[in-house]
Length: 235
Image 1 (tube, rainbow, N blue to C red):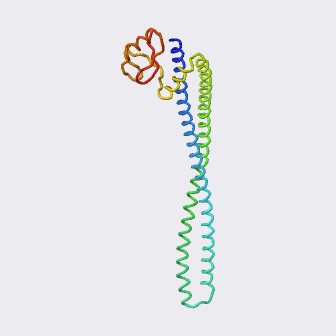
Image 2 (tube, one colour):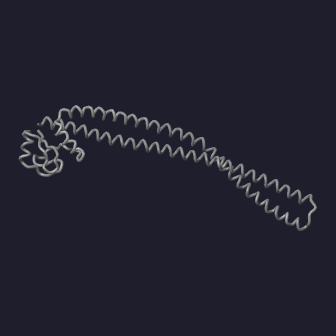
Image 3 (cartoon, rainbow, N blue to C red):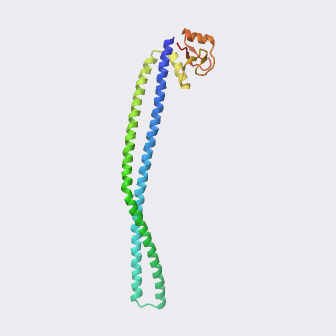
């Protein structure tokens, strides 16, 4: 009788290892996803940086064009003021407009200058940001390769354990194995020791003396009356 219990204990040990490996694989998969997401976020930030630089450059060109256009208009108004014969009222209105436009062009030139300063600063930072991203990509790629290697090794180990488990299962009575598998869906430890010769190690409740004696003498396979776990008496 003990032989089948011993086989089930081996199966249980394999099941525990497979469970632990599955947990480790899930943890590593989560870590891999986190790394990939982090890299994706950094790539998006770099793209946003380039997009902002492109937009600033476009705005700078547009602003300079507006400055040049307004400067031409001011020049033409000044020429008209200097060389055309116009009334005093028209002269006064033109002078007021010129003053306003000169103030406006000064403001636009300041805006254009600020844009250029931002663009120059960003252009100086861009090579370092791109180099940092390349290094980050290489570092994360190396980490992911290590994770993939670990996962592959663990999956191979699980496959080998499954083959070993099948061999062990072939040596256990089908009815007993089915009972073990049902318990495994509920407990991590379907097969437990009789603790101190009196209680089930799984549910901690006291076991009838007759069951304890059967387990000790190994005359038959016994179960906990409370939780239905398979019991054995440590030799």
